Length: 329
Length: 308
Image (cartoon, rainbow over all chains, first blue to last red):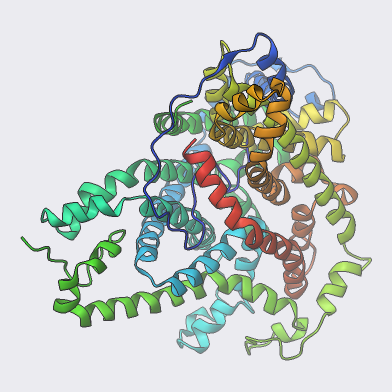
């Protein structure tokens, strides 16, 4: 269970203008570890207890509930009835669920691709900027990165406001697009997701750009010079040297983005508060909340949650593989 | 064979190499300068795009509410006012700010301290000791991070409800500790790994016991790692929204994100100037905190978590 905010996960990132002078030092020899009898288990106990109570036990409960008829009556003590796979059958034959799933996957896909492309371009651009301009861009991105997701959603919601938003105002008064006078950006689902996408991509680019920039600065100049002397052109050098260096970092970043965007909650939920139509704009995370907490149907909500968790876990297997390949455990 | 660099090439990461090839400057100096100029201009545009929402938030928060509802845009608070802050902070008709601030601070600080302590012990266990299920534990930690909070929220709600800890600091803190623990353990593991065991052994040869060698030699070297990890835990707990929304919904037990949301769902037209003042109050401390510590934090993460 996690609500990791984007940019706050285990991945490298760059200090502004931080150019390591030398290539990364060689990996140290395998650390020696000693047998400690019960000591390591004792050290792990506090963490295991907390994770067991708040992750392990609820996970078991979630799976159990997903096989039960569990509504408001059961919350107040009525014994739940076992319906086994009925909840799953209901969910999987419900066109609303499929609409939510397809919507979530498409939206996440567009967000991830946009974020990765723009993030990579900005990272590459940062290597070519003068120090001053790079610092400027770094500060701008840090500000966007530091904004709490809820706050940034609220602020963008205000900028896209129908009556007094700065965006409609500029479109009408500066660009003369009269059709945007009192234009509602959130009422139409496609336009709602455009706004949501802008908020998410805006907040996610800094993390991707900093991480990839850090990766780019790790590419040793000597190797590039040698390749250049051997006659490799710009594109060839990128393809044969820079990209292989960058590939693992790029993959890990992309997978993290996929996972984060698939389970997006805050931005969609808050934007619905501001003015979207919930039924037409739910994504998986919000749909689980609507079904279980707001709707009181914990059985079906549980089934949707389990399906979502399985989907995300199967993607995260790639993440775990990449990370374990990169690092010695 | 002389190297020819296409002036104005789009490939990055090798700009340094390009600079060093003298002939590039001779053959395409003008275009090169043009590219640099264009990139600099682009970086200013990008800077503006990233900063604008933050600036607009602060700008709006200092304007009278009737002025932001005009057809004229004010890019600077000409009629500077603190009334919005006064409304947000002291208006008795609204969910009060200070209890929410207090809840956020207490929950966040408790989370950071407890998570760091637990994660530190676990990190020492997996880096300094060999035991049967070590690898399984680390992989579990990685996988647990990926379970979506929204999927777990109902059963977490029921566990916390079962202990009668809904709407309490303790309940939310326990949940947040579990939320940040996997990441904290994973990152600290990298930092502890970065301190060679040989240092401890040297201290032991000089007469330290094993535990005093650890506390006197390794622990001080871990300070940057603990700070970096703690800051990330702080930001995560401070910004967390879903769990707080479900577990601490009562006005007196709300945290700041849930408090901010009450402005959006309030009846009647949204008081945007007030909402922006609220947003500023919630975001500015985080932004300042982030800007101050980020250099230390990110370089620490690069050296600690990545090169493990």
